[in-house]
Length: 156
Ligand code: 8DG
Ligand code: MG
Ligand code: MG
Image (tube, rainbow, N blue to C red; front, side, top):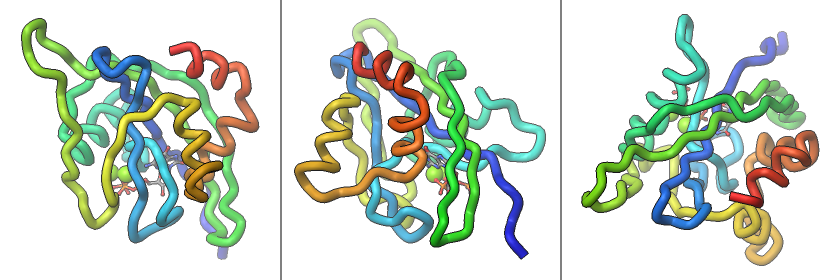
C-alpha cells in the first residue's frame, strides 16, 4: 500500500538585520537526510497554516515569528522513498523589539538537524553547486515549479 499525499509546511524565516537572509538547516535522520531545508513539518489535524508555521519554527529553532503568510504551494514526489507531499511554503519575519538583539536560531532538535544557517536564495542555490550539498526536494520543486516566486525571493 502506498501512503496518500500529505501536507508539509516549510517556512521562510527572515530576520530584518540579516539582509534578505532566511533560515535553513541541514536535515538529519529522516527523509532527505544531509539536504538543506527550511524549518517546518507536517500540518497537524485541525491546525491552520499559520499556526503550523509558528509552532514548527518555535519547536525547531526557538524563534518567535510575526505574522506568517502564505507564499506558494508545490507538489513533490519522493520516488525512492515512495512519499508524496504537497508543500505549503509560508513566509514570515522574526518578531523584533526595538533595541533588543536579533533572535538567534537554537538547535532544539539536534537529532533532526545538524545545524542552522542564514542564507539568501542565491547562496542557497550556490551551496548546492559549490559544496555538492543537496537541497531538500521540495526546494527543488519550488525552483522548478514556481520561478515567479523564486524571482521574488531573490529580490528580498
Ligand atoms: P512532524 O512530523 O513533527 O510534524 O515534523 P518534523 O519532525 O519537523 O519532520 P520534518 O521531516 O521536518 O517535516 C515533515 C515532513 O514535511 C517532511 O518529511 C516533508 C514535509 N515537508 C515538505 N516541505 C518541507 C520543508 O520545506 N521543510 C520541512 N522541514 N519539511 C517539509 O513537504
Ligand atoms: Mg518539527
Ligand atoms: Mg521539521
